[in-house]
Amino acid sequence: MEAQAGALRSPEKADFGWRPILQAGLIGFGVTVYLCITGIVGTFAERPIIADVVSLGLTSLLLAYVAAGYLGARAAGVPGGMRIAAGALSGLMAGLGPAALVLLRQVVDYRGFAIQASPALFDLLTFGLGVAGVWIMPTAALLIGAATAAAGAARPAIRRLVIWTFGSLVVLGLFSPLIRVPLLNSPVPSLGSTLFAIQGLTIVGALVTVLIAVGGEEFVRWLAPRQRIAALPARRRQALTGPALVAGLLVVAWLPFGFTSFFAQVVALVAIYILMGFGLNITLGLAGLLDLGFVAFFAVGAYTVGLLTSTGEYGIAHWSFWAAVPVAIVMAMIFAFIFGLPILGIRGDYLAIATLGFGEIVRILANSTLLLPWLGGPQGVLDINKPIPVGPTDPLAGPNQIYYIALVCAAIVAFVSLRLRDSRLGRAWVAIREDEDVAEALGVNLVQTKLLAYMLGAAFAGLGGAVFAALIGSVFASSMQLYVSINVAALIIVGGMGGVPGPIVGAIFLIGLPELFREFAAYRYLFYGISLIAMMLYRPEGLVPSRIARRELHVEPKAPTDGAAVAAGETTAA
Image 1 (tube, rainbow, N blue to C red):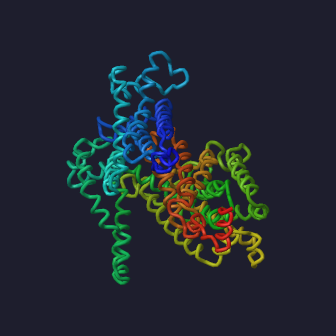
Image 2 (tube, helix red, strand yellow):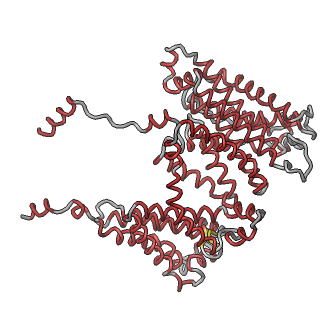
Image 3 (cartoon, rainbow, N blue to C red):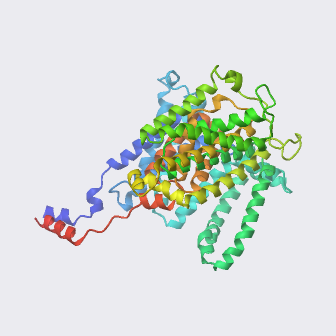
């Protein structure tokens, strides 16, 4: 009878246990303690989301509570009726992390091994109440964990609404300085001061954001650009393409004047990395050649423009920027030819090590006393003129002109990359990437085709270095570090290798966003690592992958043949 009762028991109740819930809570406990003692909460507390109410530091703890509540509610074997309680328990355990730090501080001095555990941090965790406020974080975590579990059990429309509202508050709070400045310069400047503080949203701005998010979520879904545009007739779609393109170009042209010059400099830097991303996308994404010394060609382009245009001590020709750029591109291609010819017969990791050595050789030589009379050594090449000589009050002064030049160069390189990818040469690169032996058997000249990929990638990197020299106005060997090559490789991995949108999206996420949050530069590589691990786990093909990469990494399992099914049935029966 007991066996029959066990067989009749529901699988949910039979498998239920507290262990997964406690594991989720312990993970949340560890994450919150880590956020506190490494200084993330304290440092991010300086950037408000809602002025004088919620900071980015508290938001990081809130997200940890949300994650703990979600994992607890979705743990294996938790019945539907107990998910809210499970989420609340996991959230409570996560909230005990900051509370434990506050209580243990009475008997342990953390500053000896965790310098970020300052009195300001503990005031933040207790809202200035000291030990008397130790209950606030666990209580808030319990409520947030329960709310997360309830939202997970709610209808999809409600979940979308919650995510949309929370995301709108965080994004507008973080980017409030960028939005506030153009509003203050608009015909209605009071709108900027009412909705946005100097840092973060005002309380009025937060309420307006919530109302717009609640009312606008359905409107945004109704727009559904892909579905609505796809439903239009082909002639109507073509008629809308021209006006949409013109409107987009007008917005792009207006951005440097609506925002600060720092924004123009950030966009120009992103465009420079897009240029290098397209170059490495040919070398690595299409031809499969892992180049860890890509910064060498960037350095060649920058130093060539610097030497040819500088009016300082090391200037040799005093050319204009426009005359020096073609020479920089050709010089980068020549260096790629000289170095690539002897090593492109190497495959795999050996090629990566060889290119890494080449990049380090170029950096060390540029910084050495051997080439000091020509390259300036650590002093660098100074006094590089801007491409368009204008006065300091001209609209094109400063980084604004580099903004337009970099974007035009990125558009041209994107067009060239698209044509190369779909060409016969592009298909030969893909064949080499997939299998060199098969490609050679089909008549592809390996050395010649690899060398073309290497030289074209170097040309794009040289162009990026030329624009970089004009943006900074000087060239130093210290700017040609290994991390530049790593950044370029990371952005095409995150954006998606082999396609044209990949380098653009990757540069925006990995170069643009960190530049806008320079006050958190100490945690830049931490977030790099987290984002790369998350990408490899949940979206290994990249944010905007090419069709080939999407097919390769998402192969549907084949249905078993009749023979395999019969064999499996015979085995089971046996």
